[in-house]
Image (tube, rainbow, N blue to C red; front, side, top):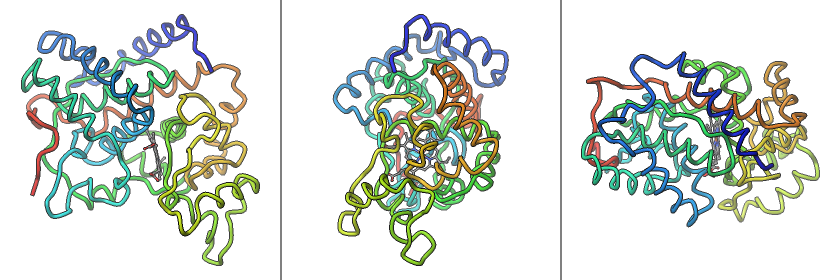
Length: 326
Ligand code: HEM
């Protein structure tokens, strides 16, 4: 759905105004105003080139920010590497995370302009924001001032990233650990309006839902049949769009898919099974405008971007994001 420029401007103002009242004392807007003026434009311009070359990258970068924030806070610990397979990147839920190279490339450009000033965590947060906006989603102001961590543990990624077969109670608990509400959860799940899932993330729903060789009865039958033709046991590397209606456009198509029982993941379908999250799905399914979703999503992203941040003298600013921790 096309978004009028005036509407977009209204959202920017609205989100900036409401969120600034709540801004954490230690994160703030335009943190790099004097130390690295122009960094946001630099990041955005580099990303524009990368998004033009790879239209699937926005989805990758949006997910990267989420997986960074949920493990040790938004501290770029997801960028760290291990020779021994013990870093966050080595955990199963991170096996399909994409966009590390893009972040590292942008960090190099930022370092050339302002050495040892801008954190990788902030670059990841800006990139997620730009990914949403380049996909025709809302534009919101990102709080900055995060600093990077230097610890990255596979077992923490396994512990803190929500399971794709979780029900609403389970998912809400994972979000609560990050100081995020059930509303944040159902709104941020709307990120699945972009991108893809690999067959193993949902094949159980097609072939062995309860362990008896059955299919998830909550899946729309025609949709399930179609999925089963692509996601076959011989073709587990295949992918499917999370929002079959419009996988590259940030819109409410995800909620329409969920509402119509055409959600790919158990965790997406589960949103219909709770009165509060179900009501939000229904509201978005029926919405005649994207205003509410866009405003909610911007607020929820700002909330997520505050998870466990290191600021002030805590943490570090590295020359490169991806150093080896062991
Ligand atoms: C509610 C809990 C969530 C669960 C259980 C979950 C799980 C998943 C899974 C299993 C995939 C597919 C991975 C694959 O098979 O390659 C995926 C993809 C994705 N997720 Fe989530 N997710 C959740 C929330 C979020 C949030 C909060 C965001 C961002 C704000 C997000 C953004 C994405 C994006 C953009 C993709 C597509 C990535 C790509 O195309 O490479 N997800 N998610």
